[in-house]
Image 1 (cartoon, one colour):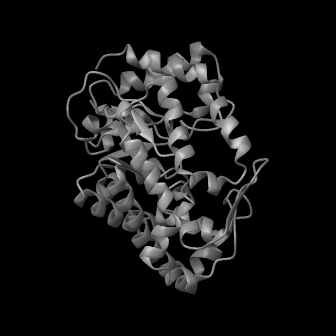
Image 2 (image 1 turned 120 degrees about the horizontal axis):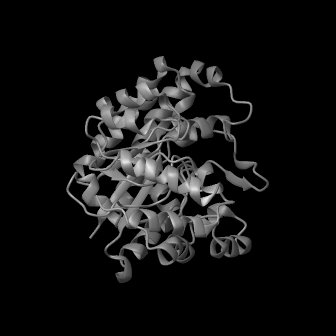
Length: 340
């Protein structure tokens, strides 16, 4: 029984489905052991045997309701030929110079061949008979978020000049159209390989002003959502950082199968404004670093608000590296005891 797929279809379920963004990652010792021996992060994402192993680590430990492919949203710029390295000590990804002409002329087959191990990894996960009852989540970054990384060449947390990007209309408009097409292609290949749920991460949507949201967030995301819906596969959208009224507008315009909320969004408010869309997430990852009493209080808060409403338990962003894995188990135990 794939609880997440059932929820996304707005059907009745008896146990609240659970998965966590970044559930396969640095908070797990078993992942850190692999990472230590594989310093090149992109190469790790292209190692189908290790990707399959890493993707299943949290499932073996916690019996969550979804396997999410271990990969990165920046695999798309890499597939388009942009150089990417990941620096340690919180520097994050550093991207090479952007050659727009080169990227615009990348053929579909060249892109697919460059990152083919990603799809082979998904296929390995699909064919693992031990986890047939789990949802298998593929994902991609949304056009705006990928564009920000590709042009700024690093996380926009540092020295980001939004106006510089928005003022170069030729670069902006050509790149976003290319990204729309490549994201659809990338997701299509993930579905072919076995993904039965897709999540689209617009991690930096919150950088956009209200006037720019429609052109650079809603409209390109809608194109991708409509494309995926035609495949008969549900899609969850996560426009992180936009204001609550913009979440409401996003739901009414884009109409994904579910909306994933960040921890700035009032869960009671979004429940009444989401046009009956299933809702995912919300809990602040920092809460997981506090006492069990406080964690239970906050988990119960979300469970009580969404009682009787289609809801997937998750966080409002990824699990932090310093999180104790025992706390993940503690949260799961709370949720498993809660009947709808």
